[in-house]
Image (cartoon, rainbow, N blue to C red; front, side, top):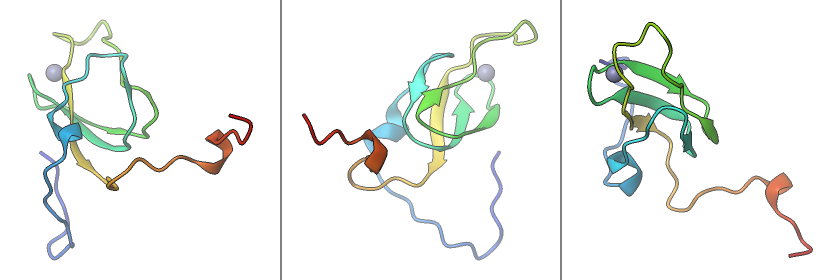
Amino acid sequence: MAYIKIGTPFNEIMHKEFEILYSPGKEAFYAGIYQCDLCSLEIVHPGKCELPRKNKDDAHSHRWRLLVSIIKPFPVIPIEDINPMQ
Ligand SMILES: [Zn+2]
């Protein structure tokens, strides 16, 4: 279970990203805390890279779901990813 400091300002929102279940090794765009739907294991993920793959100590393949994140209404595209020639 994730914990937050008492009095920390958090907002609850409805966003499709929170409904997506990711398999191990799949890329997740958003940075944040992901939780396994099967065992409740939580990880911190930097975003825009693969979620952890199954390793030999895992009892199962985790099913990652975004639990806490900073989500803007539209994805922010880093300026270095924008190609003005397109
Ligand atoms: Zn799990």
